[in-house]
Image (cartoon, rainbow over all chains, first blue to last red; front, side):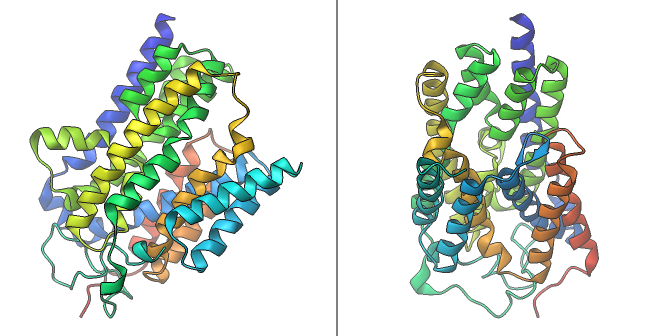
Length: 105
Length: 257
């Protein structure tokens, strides 16, 4: 089990170092308008990618999970209706759970 | 979603100091509406509770993959970045090597560098506070901070999300690790949809900020889906960052008049 502990601790150290690295970038670098714009757009690209992958993939394969997609569709509808954050989450999880209870997905 | 309806940079005029957000195109004419005051603490705590519950799924998955309860909890306490943790557990469960598992998990964690790069100007933390804040850089805390109308609210939202999510995620990890196999499938409660629904809700105001943001989001999603069958899990997310690069180069950085 020693190997697993090493993997756990190396992963933890690596992940922490990566988080800290971005916070210690010299401020003068952030004065660069292009770099600042890039840093602004990166979360948009990565979070959208996460939404897409979590909606339609499992591991390295693309999957069609009707309950999951219906849950996300419910979230989109709630967002368009300007529902509060918690309502959006509950609508998504509730829709997926309800469909699965009914044997779909 | 009214409380998150303003992008983080909506109130920033052009020529703002370097630590402040730049105004995105399309946001120059909008101003924060008094009736939609952000509630960074409430939203951050709710987000932490809602997403943290999926620590149940991680705890159960990691123990099922062969990690001990202590190793599982150590990952949540120290690595504290869900996607990387799932990647390590998933690689071990799939029979992959520990080296490949750790490498994939760290690669997946590299997006947090890009997030903290974005957050450093908003948070303005130094010394011990910076060391602590670094722990809290996740998809959720970044998204909630960027959805706030000003730097003070962004900072409050970041730490509220951090505290709530850290406590919930770790408690849920322990519960899931101990209860692995005893509780029903997390999917039957729709827990797998909470993550993507929360991310969607949090980038929603950014999508309203301009065509560049919408193009970058669509491009990132398309790249990630297209690359999923070709690359190991996690890598497509990093590759999607190239959409942000394209968005940056698409036109000169715009400053509001």
